[in-house]
Length: 216
Image 1: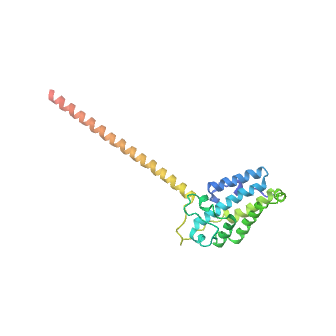
Image 2: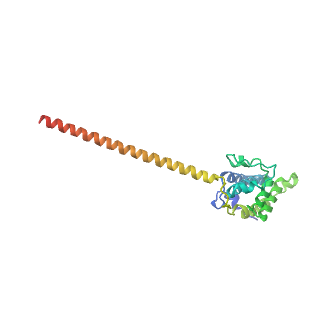
Image 3: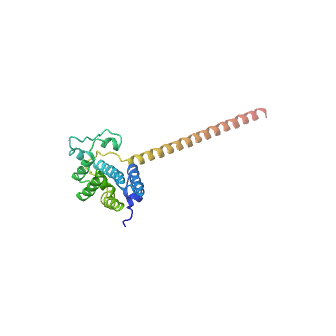
């Protein structure tokens, strides 16, 4: 018996470097497997694979990708989210594009293509015959050859979109800077308040001394 792949059992493991949407899809796939809905789990796994490849292409640099896409595919450079930018790119074509620009090798391409045909089989009888062992086998192969591989970066191409993780780190940094600024401002106000109070007390003592000297 094949044990459950780590990718499904613990997608939040940092060795995979996944974003929230990928983690969600893989958790959903695992839940469907538990319910013995094996053929449906393939759609959730496919979703995670597609998001991962889209991120890899953007991380590498989008210009090389734009030079090879077919006229029927359109990449929206102005999209604010990953989904918006890739909405008009055919997912099956995407796998071929990724191999052509060497984001994935031919072996990984073949494993992902096998997943595509497994999920796309319109023969209901054959889809019902997919079992847990088959799902685990294909996931193990894709885990090793895609999700565990490093993200490539083309140093010549600076036109890369910031990842969701980068945005998250930026938001955390902004929040930390805001808190620090608040603390510094608060401390400065306390200091000024203390100085003002000290000056007022000193002035009051001086006035009292003058008043005392006057009547002595």
